[in-house]
Image (cartoon, rainbow, N blue to C red; front, side):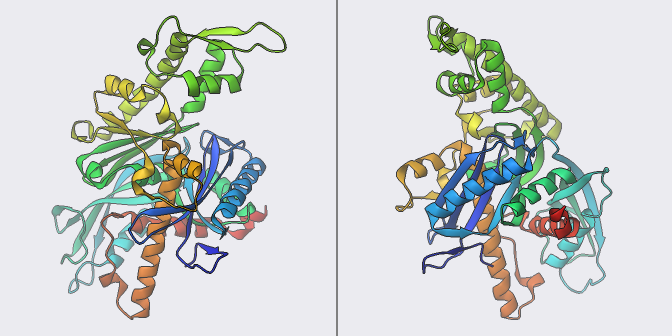
Length: 449
């Protein structure tokens, strides 16, 4: 299925990622090249005025931002953007664990993709709290006839198939608001993807996921946490604090305007007060002829460090409650715009005891000569990790769809022949469930209200 159509004669599977964040709305258009790398064709971004802590607060402003970002990305890439892969985050996101059991009737044949799909479908029927809906169902490990620890049961013989599931839920109203914004902007949603899962695709290696690693995506409104072990996602959480919270602290603590507070954070901010000298002073212009204000760099760092320590404490709590605290060889990887804060990796290491590095999405990117150099350099920043991750997820979904189509056209049994790609893990199965939820629960009438 085409994700976008090129205005030129060049035809290829082009995919679009749409990251609706608290500080920016970002559209990235791209495809996978012949070397397996992601080739970005265009980038569009706009200020996000209608989103608060990852949730849509003003539909009209959000639609305006989406349209502006899409126009910019469409012009730069020479692509007519129609279908997008959308990220979802926000403090309403919750996760839980559940165990499912399936007794197979057809014991003569091996376990197939259909059996796993039936097990996943059963999870979508779980009774949730009022106003909550299941977004993703992530299989973790299977048990076949009391043999535990099976990662991929397809092709095995067995009667009783059990699985542990990591289930991610969100508020129906929050999901509908995102869908309304996308629809009113004249776009269609291909997939709705949890943002920390997308970010992990962009900045984590398969070795890190296997060894055990914590991804911490520090955005403007929220900090997303995803814990991986043995290549499988084990825990997810969304902390309702982010870069904007730090800016507000600076605004109040230093008694400056909000835009000045943001500039102070970006240019002079540090997460470790002890790394700054006492005699370094910043001069901030006063309002309408008033005297300029002098602010100590060390005092600024104290304000930032206090809030960052609180965010890291929340992250450490999530690591402890996940039960994987002693099995994370890969340590912590921080990404998102907040990861650019000076001395933050050192503070994370000091507070948690884990190794820490900043995750950059440039490992998956191929250089595109038609893209302006400043745009290509921007894309290497951690703040675009989610957008590039959504693009990677979209590309993998498009490739899986074309693979299925080729099997259907050749008359082969999909249940027996389609195997999940190693790089996708078991994420491929949950995407179908997400689309099913969107179609079943959000009708065209909802958008017309």
